[in-house]
Image 1: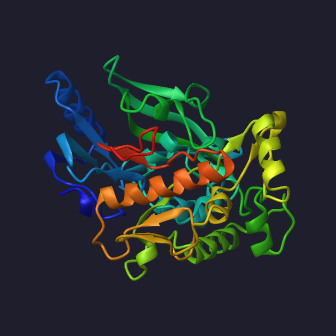
Image 2: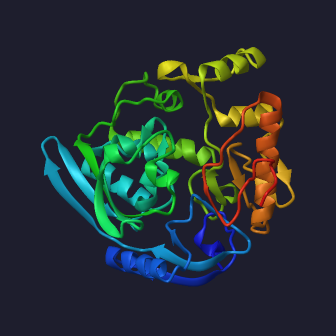
Length: 348
């Protein structure tokens, strides 16, 4: 069963399952499966994935490679990290070593190899701001290549890797981090308020990390076996980015809605606010699946008794409710394996 390898605790069996402890093993397993035309799934920390109840009819390769190398590049350090390293362990080390640029992404579960795929981010930081290059195995060209950040197609919670999901297997990521005891400028109002500073100010790295962890714990977003709200895949929906016309329409429906103005006239709207205003409060339950009691963006399997079908039914209900009230279709953030939310809202 794949359920124990996911933070949701959901997912049926794999036909074959192996662990790859080196990048060479990872490439070999995936390449061999491709030559046999065997379906394969590369699984990281399981924190941003929803696996079907039927499981995966093919090879699942669990990434378990380890290793961190550090070199100096002027006022920065280049930190190259193997895909199987724990992300928060890297953030912890960065804070301890005085490497600035990752601190606001503290407490995010998962492995390093997943971070460029999703362009992971939190509290005003994204990994695309610090990634220098990503080493990948290109399954189409059958070569290992280093892709500079400009070739990765990063955008909000997106990348070229996600848009062509399955083509590239991430082997290692190189981050360029400032050598500083101070954080990057605090760019998120909620975090600035927690720290008691103005947006744009800097604080000691450890202070920024502690504040982020406190905020995340308050939303059930730091893994804790004792907290059923953390049996989730994190934020299930991304914050929608609206064009000027869509933004104007929403402003007519809800003049005082929270928003972040973006360059070019686009507007980002908090999905959590849309969900709550559409009638889905914290703790809203559908069968054994539940919206987190701490944050409406997280869908949870609180007792461990839900199925993937249960979770998708709740996700569908929330998505369709928001669309009916505001005309905005929320997009799922986790990768769906062997299942989907179809355009008409039916779970497949």
